[in-house]
Each structure stands twice: as C-alpha cells, then as structure tokens.
Length: 479
Ligand SMILES: Cc1cc2nc3c(=O)[nH]c(=O)nc-3n(C[C@H](O)[C@H](O)[C@H](O)COP(=O)(O)OP(=O)(O)OC[C@H]3O[C@@H](n4cnc5c(N)ncnc54)[C@H](O)[C@@H]3O)c2cc1C
Ligand SMILES: NC(=O)c1ccc[n+]([C@@H]2O[C@H](COP(=O)([O-])OP(=O)(O)OC[C@H]3O[C@@H](n4cnc5c(N)ncnc54)[C@H](O)[C@@H]3O)[C@@H](O)[C@H]2O)c1
Image 1: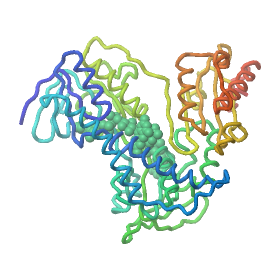
Image 2: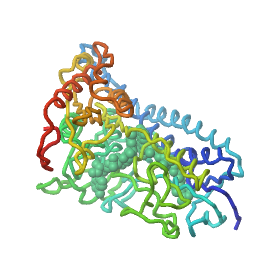
Image 3: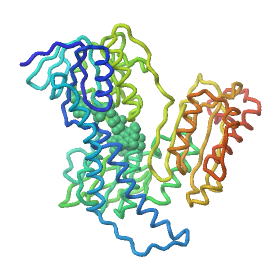
Image 4: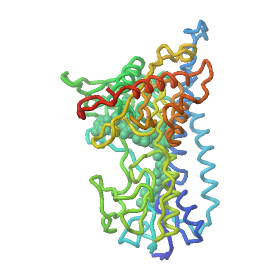
C-alpha cells in the first residue's frame, strides 16, 4: 500500500472536484485529487454537452418540419442517424478534450486514480493500492442514474442516458421512463429525429415545474407533440431478442404490452454517497444518507469534511457544482476559518421546445407554511406578438412577488426562449428588484420580453389589491 499524507483530499474529479481542487490549492495546501472513473466530467462526457448536441440536431429537423407553416416547403427530409451521432460524439470529444487538458495541467503528484472510501473521519482507502490521511476532505462524487426495481437487470435493451452517447446510429424505437428533465429533453430530441418514442410517467410531473397552472400548460403542450403517458406505472420489462417487451399500466386501465428497441430509464439520479464508507466518518446523515451540510459554506456539520455538486443533491446542475466546489475547496483550504460563499439565485432550464425555466423561489417553496403571502401575475404566449411572428406562440409565464415590499421573488414558465427570459428574471431576482423597478426597465418591440412586461403588469395589478386576510392553506396564493 502506498501512503499519502495531505492537507486536503478531494474525492471526484468532476466539475465540483476540479473547482474544489483549484480553490484549496490557492491556499498553498497539499491537495490530492482522487478519481475512480474516467476523467472528463459528467457534464462534458455524458451530460449537458452531448445532450445539447443531440437537441441541436433535433431542432434542425424540427425547423424543416415547421417550415410549411410559413409557406416554405423544403421537400423530402432525410435524417442520417449515423451522421447525427457522429457529430454528437465528435463535438462531445472536443469538449471533453478541453477538460482533459485542464486535468493534464494539474501536477502528477496531486492526482490519484481509484475508488476512494472513508475508513475513518480523516482516512481514505483508494482501491487496494493506497491509504490517504487528510486533514480535510471534500466529497465531490457526483451522482448516477437511479434504476427502479422493475427495470433492473433486464438486458442490453434497458439503458440510461450515458448509453445514448455511445450510439453510432439512431435506434428505431425508444420508451422513455420519467418526465424529468433528462426524459423530456432526450425523448423529444429523439422523436424529432424520427425515432418512435413513447414517454411514461408514473405521476403528472413535468421537469422541475411546481406551479400547477404552468404544469397544466406544459403537460398539454408537450403531449400535443409527444406520445406521453402520465399516471402510468411500469409493470415489467423483458429482453426479447433485439427488443424489450415493456408492460405498462395507466391508472384505472388494463396492462398494455409494447416492444421497443430500447427502454431509456430517466427516473432521477442517486448521489454517490452510499458506497464511500460515509458511516465511518461520524457525520450526521439526512433521510437519503447525505451528510447534513451548510449550503453557504458546504461544511458537513462542524467537521473538517465538505461536500459539493450532485453528491449533496441540493441543486444537481453544472453551475451549482462549479460554485459549490469552489466554496467547499476554499473552506477546506482555510479550515477552521470557514466562510460563507456566494450562492446565486436558483435558475434551472430544461432544453425542451418550448423551453422550461424556473428561477428564484419556486411556487412550491412559496406555498410552504410560514412563508409570506405572495401575488401572482401571468402571461400566455399564445397571443404574444413576437412569439406568434415566429410560430412559437405556446406556453405560459407566471411571476411571483411579495405583498407590501413588492419585491420580485421568482417565476416558472414554459415558453419560447425561456433560457433567455430565465436569465433576465433571475438577475432581477438576485438584484432584489421590485416589480415597479423591473417595469421601469427598457423593453424593445417586437420582442418576447414584452410578454414578461405583460406578466409583470398583471403582477403589479395583483399587488395593488389588498393582501388576502385569511391564511387558508388550501387557498391558491395571490387570490
Ligand atoms: C444527460 C444529462 C444532461 C444534463 N444537462 C445539464 C444541463 O444542460 N445544464 C446543467 O446545468 N446541468 C446538466 N446536467 C447536470 C450536470 O451534468 C451535473 O449537475 C454536473 O455534471 C455534476 O458535477 P459533479 O462534479 O457534481 O459530478 P461529476 O462530474 O459526475 O463528477 C463526479 C466524479 O466523481 C467520481 N467519483 C465518484 N465516486 C468516487 C469515489 N468514491 N472515488 C473516486 N472518484 C469518485 C466520478 O467518477 C466522477 O468523475 C445534466 C446531467 C445529465 C446526466
Ligand atoms: N437542462 C438541464 O439543466 C438538465 C438536463 C438534464 C439533467 N439535468 C439534471 O439531472 C437531474 C436528473 O434528471 P432526471 O430527469 O433523471 O431526474 P428528475 O428528478 O428531473 O426526474 C425524474 C423523473 O423520473 C420519475 N420517476 C422517479 N422514480 C420513478 C420510478 N420508480 N418509476 C418511474 N418513474 C420514476 C419522476 O416522476 C420524474 O418524472 C435533474 O434533476 C437535473 O438537475 C439538468
């Protein structure tokens, strides 16, 4: 066994781990960065980047399909699945290459390959070859796809999102399990690329939406294009030759069997904290087995252990992994002088079409008891000028503000260019603007942002009305 004695050990060389390494290193500490899988990060290898590349190809196909609506007829469209996947993979490899260059830039002595697990609060065993003693530790182990029992160990036809980016050609048919962000982004992209796709959801949820009005519009809008089955459970799956025989049952209906080339499981992700000997650290764990941590300092309890990225399950998104990693690494470097770091206004975008955006406080959070009452303003994109011009007039935006202070609190939407509207509104939220200050800002014409103005005017009108006196949990807020 090799032995290492370091100031800071970082477990995981993903986005959070690399960020933590740099921040701890900046304190002049001896930092060891441990990686049990391939270098390159989940985001670049099998996450954000390849999924957006696949979606970009689907958008190209969709533009051709939508062209006749403008009187433009492109003729017969041929989708070359091999070429689609070749571009996805080669551009993905380019992005991964940039990450690998960064990792190459770290000194060899600071890197260790192998699966790390705690053997005590300050000690880690890495595979069967190394023992690490660390004064401080950052857990940045990421997450992995969760597989429901009915879909475990079925055969090669049951896959997860990682596997999609190994394809060299598009399949003929895919059943997607889950209407979270991954299921909807990949399911819609594959559908637009000519794959027969059915999407199954055990509940009625759509991506990260919590506002019931936006959820209703989102479910209806996406179901107009996709073969979407809400309230449907997966009964069983069986590999049958080159296909999977999938049995599903919709609420109140009989079981139904269908064959697909692949069943893509997109049923959430499990933080990688269950196979790292966390029980030997003495840390307090929550109901999901994740160490209890402070989301401003990323410190687990009052200990010398910090956590960042998907591993902590707080906001499993790339920008958050980067921020949390930096805060965790900085505090591991400066421990015990731990300081709160910058956490930004929450912002999440699903790259469906229409896009889904949520920012600031969610409707669900605002409805939690003990929070102040809030008013709601809204706009439908159906008759919004620029959206109609572009034939993208689908969706709804709902905006929230606090009675009295008139401070803007957050928004949920499905609609055109939600990635841009989401940034605009989250910046206003972080700047703690009031609805009136937002309405004083410039709005050009004709732009989708005019839809935001309509929603804000509606919100302003709601704020002018008296705050409801009764505190009825069943009453919709803002009414
Ligand atoms: C299909 C898909 C699409 C996505 N799209 C987006 C998007 O558009 N926008 C967005 O913001 N986010 C997106 N995400 C989420 C984003 O990719 C993640 O939030 C982010 O990559 C998490 O970074 P991380 O550093 O926490 O984890 P990772 O990058 O997964 O790094 C964790 C590392 O730890 C290693 N590791 C684990 N356990 C051990 C151990 N015991 N010992 C040693 N090493 C270990 C792993 O091998 C891995 O390299 C997407 C995710 C997926 C799956
Ligand atoms: N654009 C983006 O920013 C982006 C894109 C992809 C992924 N991500 C990140 O990755 C995370 C994981 O994505 P995801 O879509 O896998 O998870 P998710 O939590 O968003 O959605 C999981 C879905 O699976 C369903 N589900 C859960 N358990 C199930 C079961 N036993 N049987 C059937 N269905 C079940 C849920 O009802 C839900 O529809 C996201 O939360 C997000 O943070 C972000």
